[in-house]
Structures are given as C-alpha cells and as structure tokens.
Image (cartoon, rainbow, N blue to C red; front, top):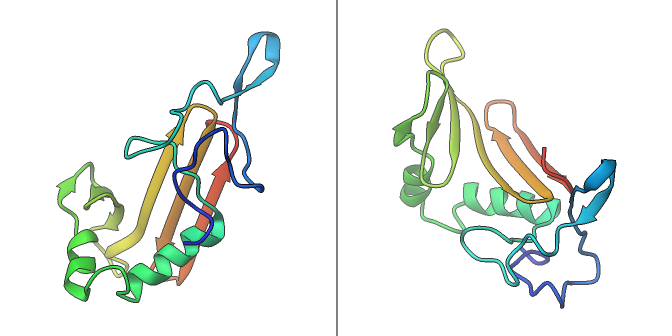
Length: 137
C-alpha cells in the first residue's frame, strides 16, 4: 500500500478527499471536526481503492501472512447469523447448503462521520470490489 495511512488532518496528501456530513437545512459540512486529528485503530484511516486491491492481492499471495496465518484470519470464528460469520477482522459470507455451499465473500468495512468504505472478495467468482464514499451511507 503506497497511498494509504494515518495522516494528520492538517497535512493530508495532495489527492485526499474530504468527507461530508449532513448540515442544517439540507446543506453539507466538512467532517474535519468529526475525526481524530490523526487516525488510529478506531478510525481515521485514509485508503485508496488501488491500495485496497493491493492489500487483497498481498494477503492471498501470502506476502502479509503465512498460508497458515492467512487461513486462520479467514476462518469463521464467530457466527453472526445464518449467512455471516466473523473471522479476525474480516466478515465472511457463507452459504451452508447446496452446490454453492462454502465461503461466498470476504469483506472489510469502515465508517466514520462523513466517510464510508467497503471492500470485498468473492473467491469463487474471482471478483474484488472497493467502494469509497465521501458521505456516510
């Protein structure tokens, strides 16, 4: 990842986008006073779509973790409902019966006031998605 990280809000990289929250009477206002000055584990990360795709590639190519570590990360550890489990920081969409049983999707999501993020991998289909929004959905 080359363009992502935790940046000071008063020193953002040149191509950074600001997020927006609903203001009074249908207006919009910048989210700069709704975020930590420097992000951390609870939010405030700046990420690009290209870097997120690099992350997934490095993860599945075992350049971030060993094959065993990657498998552990992507193993369902907590069942949320019939179709969703949680691994170690990764949501795992599953289907339990039929010819398409097994993992359907791995995803990570994030949201702070005025920004939203979702990225998913559909391993059987070979699809990787990244959606970045300058508002909260």
